[in-house]
Amino acid sequence: MESTFSSPAEAALQREAGVPGLCTPPEDLGRVYELERVTKFVCDLGCQRVALQFPDQLLGDAGAVAAHLEEVTGSKMFILGDTAYGSCCVDVLGAEQAGAQALVHFGPACLSPPARQLPITFILGQRSVALELCAKAFEAQNPDPTAPVVLLSEPACAHALEALATILRPKYQDLLISSPALPLPVGSTSSQPEPLERFGRRFPLSPGRCLEEYGAFYVGGSQASSDPTLDPDLSRLLLGWTPGRPFISCCPDTGQTQDQSAQAGRLRARRLYLVERARDARVVGLLAGTLGVAQHREALAHLRKLTEAAGKRSYVLSLGRPTPAKLANFPEMDVFVLLACPLGALAPQPSGGFLRPVLTPCELEAACNPAWPPPGLAPHLTHYAELLPGSSFHVPLPPPESELWDTPDVSLISGELRLPPSWKSTNDTGCTALTPRPQLELAESSPAASFLSSRSWQGLEPRLGQTPVKEAVSGRRGIAIAYEDEGSS
Image (cartoon, rainbow, N blue to C red):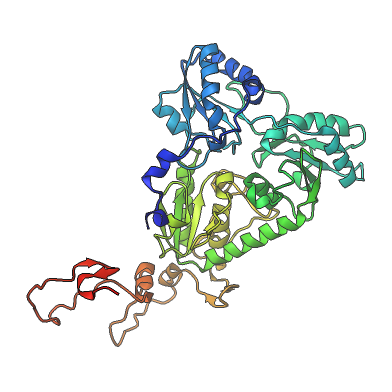
């Protein structure tokens, strides 16, 4: 029973850090983890205490990397693992608790800006890429040399995009190379125009060009697991890419390609379904999925304002990483909204699935804001910061007197008519006469009370004054499988 609702305490002690047999050979540590660049980063800052953050799959190399850096730099290294929410986010809180003056993040990263200022460098890894096979696959999928195409990749393959573009540029005229949106050094200035930053990447677009004109060629994934739902980074690109533009993925090892247009359509259809579930919901659970990403407090206040404007009741829950067992303890919630970084919000669900659907902030915005979406917007936003005031995608709520709140709406799931928010009828100033009620009636009930009244078992009934008083008597002895008075069978 304990494992159904929570993990046993012994599991944390028995779990092995790292996967045995997959540790990096000592001679390859410098290349895989870019130890020279890390050493330069630490020495330039003159830090005496540095935090090293590793995801679970790289913890097997953490000790060797930390020992090498301590020997070379003379600084004290602290290993951060088992983050409270997701390993893709920078654990600034953990670094501050260790008194670290800088942080080095290893492995895949969402590149979301941290909530607190701290010198950070990212080591995304360098996965080997078969350039010739990928170039041939690109030529097979793009026969038109004038078609606009942007080169994308998973973070570990970003180092090879420039070399791949060098092979393709003599033939293709309109080729755009993306790069990870790594934080710029403090005080750095550039005379070049600032590139477009989206999906955790930078796109150096020419003046007058827009990203919606380009098709995509993505280098990443593997032939064994081609399902993009297993990769939050690829899911983020598929959801936000312009519908109708080609999106091809290529395995960096074999050069095998796959058209992701059909999968992108399925992902968007799933998101539209979740928007309908959010519109039907009366009680919304807001899951705090990060404490280290910038503007998470402002985003939480924005989501609470959204639900209140739409006439819904919201509750804020801080549960760490959401699991089906945790969320099953809150059956009163109709939907959950995970406030996390783009990769954390799109992380794959466990095999068991959740009792209630888990949404992203963008889907709640589409469900509660009648003015959404703005004209010309891409079909899906993945970062909650893009919904806040100050962003080019922010859409303010309509004023209370707007006709958008009165637009008739029918649920595509239940087929029932959705009524305007409850405050819309109470704020009606057109009529000042009082309507007498013949008897006492319940004007409004809370969603929690309505949920309790619909349950078949509502708890123990006191039945005060209806049960006769009796003396206490001895009960049955034994265990449920065989009480003493039952005999043997």
